Image 1 (tube, helix red, strand yellow):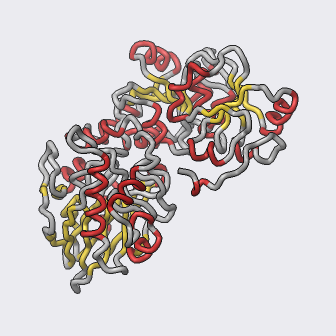
Image 2 (cartoon, rainbow, N blue to C red; image 1 turned 90 degrees about the vertical axis):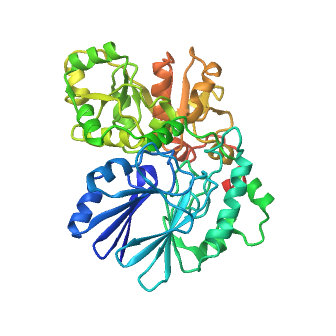
Image 3 (cartoon, rainbow, N blue to C red; image 1 turned 30 degrees about the vertical axis):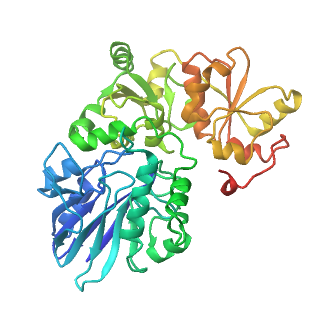
Length: 470
């Protein structure tokens, strides 16, 4: 028996490859399916099952394409109603895979179809659970994503409490927990950077698994402090439930190389958003007017999902040469399939063609500190998340979290310099590009973000440990 975690850091997502005696099960695969097919071929094995723990909201799963390519059977737990052919397993059902058994444990709460798969080895020993978004390392799944008119987040949390205590916490302490996500995912609040653990350790350290915790306490703690989910989540659920375009077709369309003239014409004809995926500092030095910068080397896909509300939005993009396929792939992972092509020769070709160029002023933290010392009334805008801002911030800074920047536009000045910063510089450049496109011409990005600012003499609020914030 072989179990392999295939972890994708930019999505904080874990897929799993389970092989026994020539048969394979893939749990929660990503959109691009070649790695799974190649791995099975290398093992001279057949993919028998594609196991889905639930209808994912934060990424588009590869279940449909993988089943078509391999002949495998897609499996969901109880209550799932997909629009394509799939086996809807019953609670307690056992699936045979080579010499091992996979037992279906219905664990509703995150969603009502949420299911945990229990791996039982050839000797009958309960070995591991693939817990999806039911149980994370250090946290549990948020119970507000499947809210319907007849089901509140409190009711979902109650289901989750029962699932954890009746289906998971009764398992042996040496069972390995393999969750669908780690730190950085929007599917939970306090996930660990660790991507796997023993169940016994989680019983000791995970706040939601406290033995003396009442259901009311659980509901309160699990629902407290939940930020609104990103706008693309419902559309990803829809795609995972109803199906989607073949990934190869999406890649072919998105990798059309366009000359500067063709690129400009395509933008004008389609109303496409111009997405610049280069590094923040490279973008600041020169970019196509009204383009938005979301760097490919950061948390690219989640920020695309948070800031571009419609997955059907036509997108034309600028990338570092040689990274075009990566951009299209990572957009497709979160359902942005309407990529129409990229700028051939990257921004250098646009500039060489004599096209209009824009820039964003970017200064060091030391320069910012000097400006602040001369005039502490300058406009400072902190675009970090609420917990980061509450923990410590520049005394005079206005808070406008990047996720909800559009909600704060009316509060921001267009006629005076506005100094933007985040934690390290990635998010503030995204914010600066959005504001530039909205007609804010006096934005100034502070390089290095709050980490660099904290090394200057700029007055800051007293530090509060984030773990003490509610």
